[in-house]
Image (cartoon, rainbow, N blue to C red; front, side, top):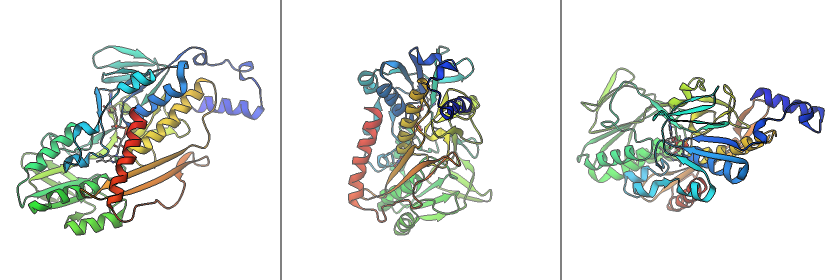
Length: 411
Ligand SMILES: Cc1cc2nc3c(=O)[nH]c(=O)nc-3n(C[C@H](O)[C@H](O)[C@H](O)COP(=O)(O)OP(=O)(O)OC[C@H]3O[C@@H](n4cnc5c(N)ncnc54)[C@H](O)[C@@H]3O)c2cc1C
């Protein structure tokens, strides 16, 4: 945090050869440090792997997840149209345990006390740590209390996606499908637009009316691509449409408190915030956790790091960039354990491939660099490269990209 950085910065400026002559060396540097990563998604699994790969015997790494395996949200829209199965997007933590020597704990964390450095589980057991990485993703902000089993969001991998597929398969001919797009920032900026296209393509033979309610003022990414596809599919697109009520008994959605629409199937993707653990620990500022971008250490608590969708930044909430942030965080933790400063010019990279049919995809990528003046990550280039036109070759390349990302994260 700020104190230790300025202390080390001070040492550097003075050019003192041995910091320990002036300040006591941290005890963590001489004993095997216990680093615990909570959340085994793209952010947490990558961080655990690289902590152990780079830290070797100097560090004991534990990865905790409430689920015994992980279902990727990336590519999950392809489950809806039958191009992928749930099992193809499921990843176990076996490789991380056997190849890298990480301890995996399949438990739900109920709280973390950052003063005593103790993690408590819902089964009342506990675990202590020297440093903890919180990588627990997002939670939803619902317009009102309604049942996700009746109105699925399908914005986390696994069961919710399977449920939406089941309901899509049952939608009657000439029926209606209404989905909503949350206010940015939310997980995967192009994802909801991608979903509208995939669903419209899937349901085209049933003559289904697809309506998209977007809380944003306009399509927020790849506007040319998605507006062209929306026109092609005959999707009704309504911008500035904030979902204000969901009636899960009558399958009705109200937006802007005045307009109510009925559908055979509703797919409401609610607004988003960091997972509840971030709030319980007091790591939040507004909806997400502010961090120091040189290390991803919380700006509010010492020795607590927040990576992936749960942290607050202008970078997109996406799995590829979460993998990138995780490596910066792992490196910074290992340096800190040796009383070294974090790397001062980190760069992160984001990529999202969007299938828009059973054969075509577009993509979007961006590079971010650390700006020391604002202490923020800023775009390294003012242009965000995009595919332009969706194509079959993009669709095929998408699987090379995911293959690399999945294996860099989980194996
Ligand atoms: C349809 C769709 C398409 C997408 N496409 C792309 C794409 O093309 N490119 C891209 O980069 N990203 C894409 N994404 C976004 C990407 O999936 C997310 O940004 C990414 O999963 C975030 O990773 P994370 O590790 O922060 O969170 P998660 O993946 O949500 O992982 C969080 C983990 O924490 C665990 N957890 C939570 N709370 C606790 C607790 N209390 N105790 C123990 N464990 C806990 C959860 O079980 C989970 O495993 C897409 C998302 C969707 C929905």
